[in-house]
Length: 433
Ligand code: CMC
Image (cartoon, rainbow, N blue to C red; front, side):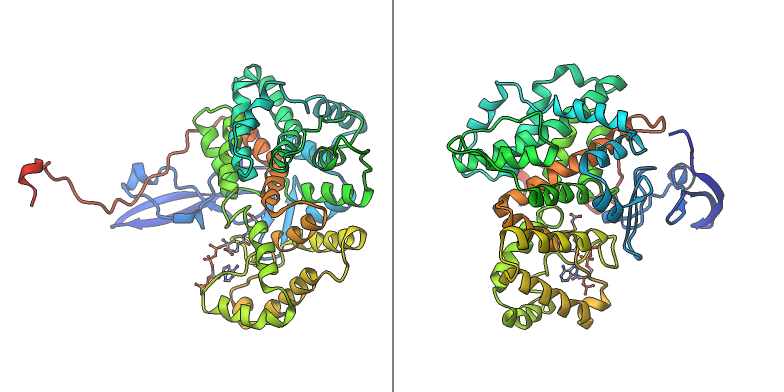
């Protein structure tokens, strides 16, 4: 990175009587950071921060979150403005390149992505190796990793041009792979991409078209899909993004790194929460059952899925847009009085006023309304996290590219507080009691 954060004096630490001076660095927004890189060398101690709640793992100029205020900015632009006025591909360009494109730049980028959407013909055989009832995220982990075996000409991470091509390939091919994972589970033939269609429309067609009849796209659903992609495009150094960075720090190729990110995203505390949130709403079933459910949450029998966030201690700005999308989609194809929407709205109302949730600053996150929306659009719950992975690919790859081009980049290698046995001598089997 060219512009290093400005210095801001130093913090002083007393380690067993030894004074250590640690520089303080300042970014453009957000908390300052104490630079502890020399701490171990100078004072022979590590810092301890499981879950990285107080640790900045890298410098980044891509995304900023102010969790207390509920702010999310991509390259400085607020997410609600991007969701309202931009489109997913333009946001992809912004995340990758740092600025919004001119009309000419956008046309070129759009063409690049469009012309990389097809998969190598032999790649399709890969899907046939999975059981038909395989979770589509299992297919995604395997299939995206397998891209490394097909596109050898874009795996040299030291070549900026190859990095760019791999980024474009991943963004372009992800919808094709995701749609194939879906079609495979349905037992329906794969649908090839169409170059005249936009990104979201093409994806919906690959998911829902069948050879027996013409596919008619619905502009409301296309817009909602594009917006859902935009809302999930990047989210700073979350678990899956940190996974991609850590995998990439060893020099692994970008396809393998993104497969690692998909594996991490799958977990129910991360991207898997949208599937869990919808299952939870279905289980509650009617607004009358909410108090009983809330009592169970307070007794710590289960968590309110789609609520709470490590960083947002205020309303997730993505959830506001998602709630609006849910209403639009249900008005178009579902039931605007859908009992699940009613349960969700009532649950949100109660939780936002209940002391348990207020005290812990638990607010709806992006996953609270996304399940209802995607379900009304025709996706089964197993596909929800796949759609998240598809959209997040651009964030992962933008962060990976930023890391690779940062001259201060090193292999990620956390240390530990060892609590196992101290050194002892091996005891032969016959002498063990
Ligand atoms: N329902 C009930 N209680 C909760 C919840 C919840 N969803 N989330 C946190 N809490 C409580 C938790 O029990 C703890 O209470 P106490 O201090 O009394 O023990 C307190 O709030 C702090 O919880 P934490 O686990 O220390 O918080 P965290 O920052 O480590 O966890 C989280 C963040 C997202 C994992 C968590 O809020 C959660 O499990 N939420 C449900 C899953 C979910 O919706 N995940 C999607 C996140 S948004 C999409 C994404 O970025 O992947």
